[in-house]
Length: 266
Length: 266
Image 1 (cartoon, chains in turn red, cyan):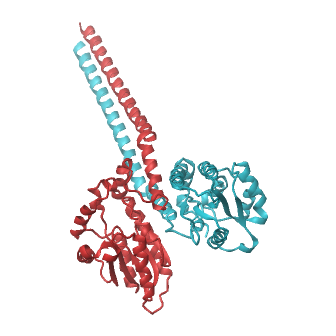
Image 2 (cartoon, one colour; image 1 turned 180 degrees about the vertical axis):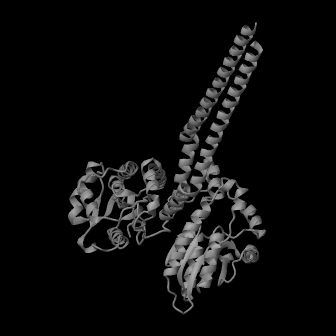
Image 3 (tube, chains in turn cyan, yellow; image 1 turned 90 degrees about the horizontal axis):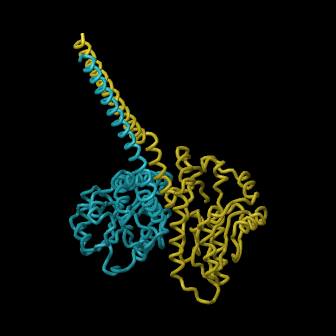
């Protein structure tokens, strides 16, 4: 009886050990399976889309892809990750470092006519919270919703550009903030928003006057820069998140394109 | 005795089970540890460098970072991966698709003066095998080694650009291949290299004449384009891998920047 019991127990032990071994093997194979599944999906579905979105964003930033009405729908997640997970800020930081390298090489003559131009939306002030509600640019442009957002005056500063702005002002540049925002409806709130975000000490905030309503940003901004040069200003640098900020005439000595994969302004 | 044996066996079973449990817990924690280790290293070392190189390449392609003598040493591996693992080709493909979209919108008048300009090095012909030997652009520029490579006449076609070229020729564009290569020493071999790679049917191959030796590519190429416009050509498109191909005057109706993270031509 005791021997039978022992044999029975031994059998139970062996079955238990086999079961545990089987469970572990199953777990391992399922882990491997998941990994393989992920790699495959990243090669076919997700990966293809990620790779396309990388190419698309590069082509946008190099001005190869133009006049795009919305972010391609398959890039919604990609643009969100880019904007929110740090790479957007790192891209901005590197460009601002490059700009500061250039600023440090300039020796301003003491005649106080040295100008610098900064765009406002998504250059000085970030609209990322607004675009979050618009699926990061996958939803169509919605001028009245954007106006409502701008009217709140709560666009936060883009910190690397605020840093650049302060250095430019300290160095004696006359900084012109040149925006396509409508002067009549958004002038006051934009001025306040800039002030509450620390953009203090600029030379002039220039908004779109009634005469330029409906005109392209390239035409409007070129005309303003021409006017500044006629006033005697030397434009050393010109920074914007849109190619229409830095295309056209009287561009200045150097132009800089900040990233913006969310919308295109013609 | 039998009972003692059974108790002994039970103890052995429990110890065995505890040991197996401990081993599995250890394995799990070690797996977790590895994962954490990798995430951390990707956040600090590798990841920082990857993230910097992403920002650097974007800034290069958007013409924010200029006159860089070599690829930053920490980006050697990154540039190799970009060039060799498919993303470079995918970036080229997307741009060529964009160009073809534009080409399809143009309706050429039947006056046969519709021109298109393509650069040669790393636009029509790839120097990737040469740059592989130069650490993908991390090694300093070596004009005599490059000349030796060009003299072999073995630069392969960039397939997406060859496809574009053939479509342009078929559509009736007069395609001008405009290169900074020296006419005297590299004229013949370049002509042969283009032919053996399938670039057949272009209007003219224009190389740098003695008068432009040592001059910037922007000056040389602007002068050539001016000459073409004076000859009566309408330049519809202008494609190059360098900003110096598509900056300056008489640029044409649209310009396209192909990726090149390996070198900068002023």
